[in-house]
Image 1 (cartoon, rainbow, N blue to C red):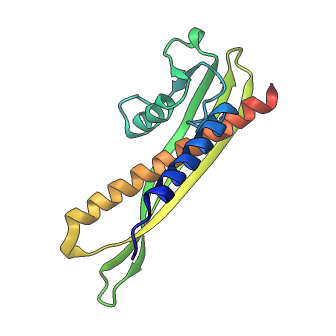
Image 2 (image 1 turned 135 degrees about the vertical axis):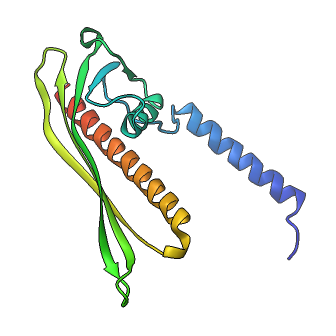
Length: 172
């Protein structure tokens, strides 16, 4: 395969630089994490050190919203009403051993403003994944299950933040 000439490489770089300058000039910037539409939020019923608390903190770290403790300092109050993770057998081998599991995570929450008015009523979100299981690879499968739960937890937190952000934006 022939190598690209110096002229075509320079032309390509020049076009890419021009496109970048055009996008920067019009105000384009890559979209970051969507915030909640409020500078501060109080989050109830979830410790910051729990897996769900860490997922929420990760999501907030990418936005302009801060997690505050005293209710008086918060523009929003996010009440985590419940969070569940469960595992069910999806299929068995002919000799009765587990072949596949179905795991689920569900998150129920509501959002209030600083006056205590309900902005978003109790809402439930859920996610599920399945994975194959092998008795010979127990440690690897346990690690896979843990990673799948982490992924579902982050998915639920992202969905929750999108719903809250849209609700707040529609009220402005």
